[in-house]
Length: 542
Ligand code: NOJ
Image (tube, rainbow, N blue to C red; front, side):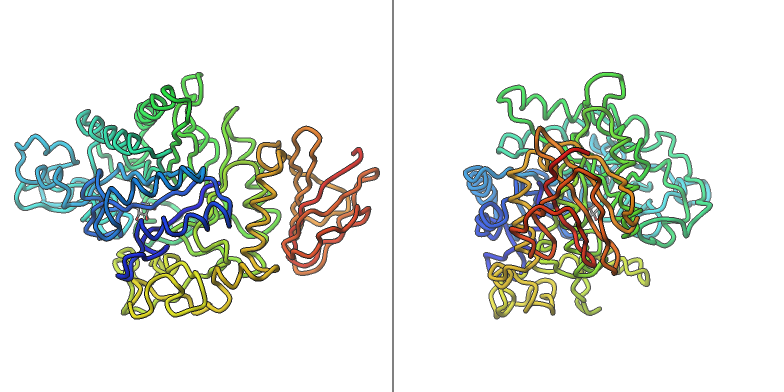
């Protein structure tokens, strides 16, 4: 169970309107005692000009003063470990800030030993960029540099220059970055934009996309006009991932504690996604422990579509691979805004009962919605550079609301937080929801505690079921381990739905999204209310 903290927005202990590591430390009891999560993933806190809010790293082995210093980081790791919480840090291998010492040296001249640490190419004879690759955040992926008379590659902003992972010195230096944080006690990494580390070495043009308005989960403008098959995920990536895994496994070999590799890799072809676990040479799973599964982000919010995704994903996983699911992060509209307040409860029950590791985005436990950001306070470079498509990611990055007080207890009342506080503060705040036995926070806590105490939910098998008489607006699946047999039943429709139980089966409700079925005895007839999700204990044969 991974909980994502976006440090800028979690808790501001220093009082400057931006969250920091000391703020995360202050809230560890909330994360470990109140919620009961297993691991915290911290988005980047490294020195950075913040062109992409920390995903433009200027020094991989330090802490930006905005967030504190290395002593704050060490204190956070120690305090987390004392509570049994794991710390996962963000690792941004594909690009550095243009202010990183490596890039400054690289661009100083073509003869500098660091020149080849980045991807440089001469212009075409007519002066145009070396190929047609488009940057995710708009425009060409090539930036002209007058000093060297060459273009450099940037898959995102021009301020984020792509490292040349084909250079062994870059690989060595970036593996040393992993060791630096492992030596400081981290339990693993969430690896950013991983597909970008290996491109076609010949830099072949991307072909046009025949379906530019196709089935993406969000429209990205001109970027969608080409198929991004040459600017990322070259086959050579698998060898590099095995090398990375080797670095992590060496630490596990010393003390028996696994160090996790979670990869941000946007693949919606499930068998292709499965290849990122490794085992591609017939051996053990030797690449990522968890290639992020973003499938639910682009699945229609219906019982049929969700079931189809989960069943296909389960079937496509290589033998022994551990599944994972993501419903929100700092790049996506919040789940409560995507599916509404009732849907958000159903989504939380789904996320925390499917087989595998769920990643929970801070604030989703409150059903926090996207926060409207007036244009004059917009920060995200994506939204600013590619206007008109609603690509700005500020709304999902708004401060964590801790209490219904000025500035939500995120920062002092007389300081402007870096992004606005939710207008829904009276409902969406930790303190009020803690006191409310029917709140989303109460539901999340109950689900987490149930999951922790249930072998079937924590590690059991998964099987979707088709029972006669059940509408396909309902998604039913079994989680089983030893004698424990649980049924998860989700009604995605507005009308109530009868769930006729097969003969010989009795069901005892354990937890409903409506939080009001506690203590009901065994049922032989079951009906789900509108948008109700229910976990039931099954007895009998069927
Ligand atoms: C993916 C990160 O999640 C996103 O926030 C960032 O802008 C890009 N990678 C570039 O690092």
